[in-house]
Image (cartoon, rainbow, N blue to C red; front, top):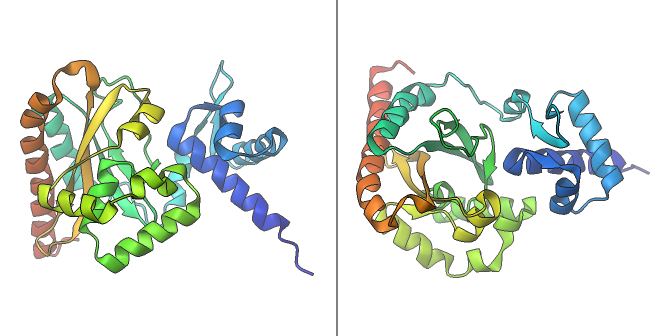
Length: 266
């Protein structure tokens, strides 16, 4: 009779790694609460992940963070990919224009993955988590991506996300009226991160707006979001200044990708 214990151990280890990647640094107690596992199980998973080089305990503290090695888990990820080469200077220039940092994220089956962030390097006290997986339904980058997918691909993405068991992929409030919400996002061309999600992850410090990066063939290859402190001023006034520049940056990235493809340099 086949034992499923090794499979369960892998699933638990991945769950711990994902929680730390998305919300770290975290204490053992916080990991236990978020994963719903017994503390001895979490401790064993942490010991394994530390041994394999994916997690480390932050010096002088009792919290855990992921290492750069987690990036190797993203199949096909290349830190020097053409998208990054094209997008990074444009995103950094955007920061100079609007005064706020941004994230660049790509769709990966059931979530968005941050492949570039300048928020830590450019002065925002909230650290960027390169490689973090962001929920589709609760983030601006996830919503603009869902709005750009075909109906079949969207259903697949939501099904995979629901199976992953993340709170933000199964919350009834976020699923309610989703087709209408995505239709409006498609028309507007931008989306906001869910306030409840931001309250939980960032303790009410920020709001975020995102736009898709679309190439000439109509394909949304990625999404870019800008993060703004809530106490910086009236949102609508800030949005009126930020959104046109954010859209222009996304358009510049999409156009550069098209030009690169046309030149055959990829």
